[in-house]
Image 1 (cartoon, rainbow over the protein chains, first blue to last red):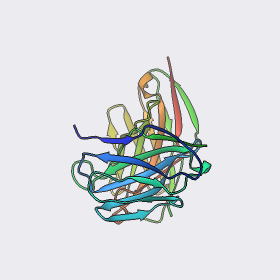
Image 2 (tube, rainbow over the protein chains, first blue to last red; image 1 turned 60 degrees about the vertical axis):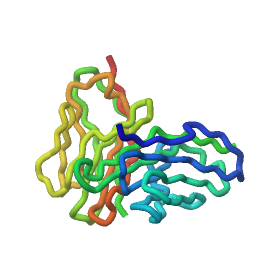
Image 3 (cartoon, rainbow over the protein chains, first blue to last red; image 1 turned 90 degrees about the vertical axis):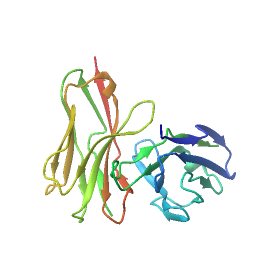
Length: 115
Length: 116
């Protein structure tokens, strides 16, 4: 069955370190997204991609970067981790056409703690 | 920019009863999708129901239905015959079409607890 996976599921790091969160999907979706979820907030969009070599900034992109070298993967990099980036990170993918019609399929999330 | 508001941070309902979760949104667009997603305590978020703005008929999926009021920019979710497995956080989401395909704006969520 197709799926979307994230690794690691839990990560503790120190302020100033570079961290990369992996996202891999086997849906063959063109669209991929990274969100963060903080207590008391919904999901806020960090970066997104509509295809290979395409990346775009979302509403909370400062301090994050992504690259898309193939259809399946969209790794999220925190250039220099800050305590404000402690959060749960969700990756999602979607396709415009039949049968999902833009439904987003979410990964299980990565809980990141920056000390 | 679009905004999505869920005015009920927490709700509870007795098993087998009906509950309605509220969602309002602000947009000047005419062509868009609206979604309700469910996030159980296990955290994997899944789609509950989807509504295309051009459709006047309210979407229904088994025990889940929506009341879509386009003029009022309201999109509420009704859960009938509530079950313990419905306990979750529910997010309302807006997606503009066609240029922002797949990019959604989410509300802050409503935590629903179904009590036995």
